Length: 509
Image (cartoon, rainbow, N blue to C red; front, side, top):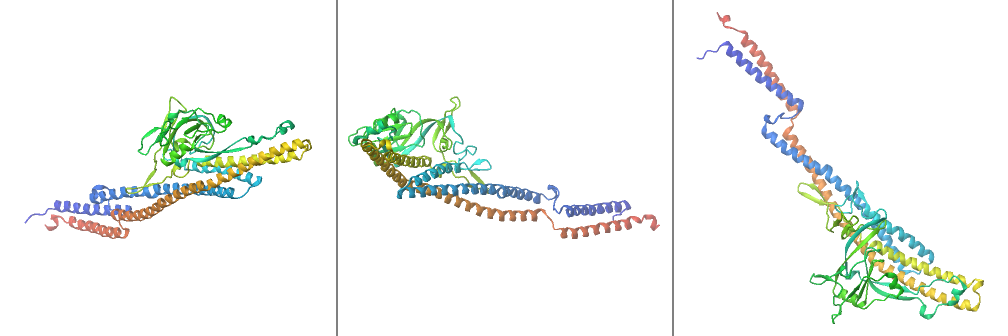
């Protein structure tokens, strides 16, 4: 039999007491922190699982608490802007319906003109909407506005604008416009039959800007059915192979003075108005070929409210020749990660909502109203002159009758042109409205996906919190029970040790 000494009893007692004390200390710490482990070495399995759950929960919180709210804010701002755009375009559409049907008084025309001028500015102003300082319609260029916020006379661009056979439209030009006489001598000249106002209906393609720079004939490109790009100048437009001729050095004022001449197979570029006028042969050829074209031109100086070219076209900012900036028109989708492995496009691009031609369409409508107002003012002024004493003689009355006939003819032309433009505007602005509605529908579907993901992230967040808690946390009631048992064991070990170590060998001698 092995001999047990007092020192052995003492050492074993101290070891047992210390073990119980360590257990009490561990449970005391757990009761204080309510955590299963304090350091990874306490339980490596729990520690590894905790790291994984915390990492997943941190990523989930980033999606649920930051990315998704940011995306929702972007959608809300965009939706508000689209609502306003739709309302503005609907107002213009209603003005077109109104202007195309009824005979207007001067007061009606003035009211339409005032409304059109305000709507023209506001429609693009909505495109400058931003969310927390980031423009929502300008793609990746969130620090850039859609339009020029002030007039920039020195800013220059080289722009390549795509146009199509679908952009060919009729435009009415008028010669021999009436200039109301200011003296008896001017009145007596009268208006000869050959000098009466005349209407000229000519096909044209209108570019997105006016006040452009000079170009060469080769800057107008034609894309044939096989996708080959070639200069439009020289392309055969009929069965006999007669070539299209492109004229780029004609001034608009000279063309008007000459009576609006355009050859059957001719295209004329006017930099002043930003137009390509063309003969019937060219228009018919481009339409039959369903032709796509591109025009490269320069423009220096932009008005407040004009769209910035980089948001719509391939272009180059040439303001600083030493630091030219090239822009390529591309699909620029801003995507937010809203869930594990799930991205969502949050932006709507201006080119998908607001056509660059809206402003010029409104300008055409406005100009037509102004022309109608001016023409009827001439009629009213001549009628008033006919009542004045200084023009009461038969010769003056006969001459003023000729002036009145000419002015009334001009007014009829102006009214007809206004009504035709407004009738055409019904189709155009219905198309623009449909474009905005389509963008709203697309954004609504994306917003619906975002809401579904938000609900799923909320459920996942709750689930991960519960998993994390089950892995790391302890119930206080359970810890108290274990602590009480451990503490009692510790106290019992102290008492047992006191009794065992209180007896020595001398007690038995």
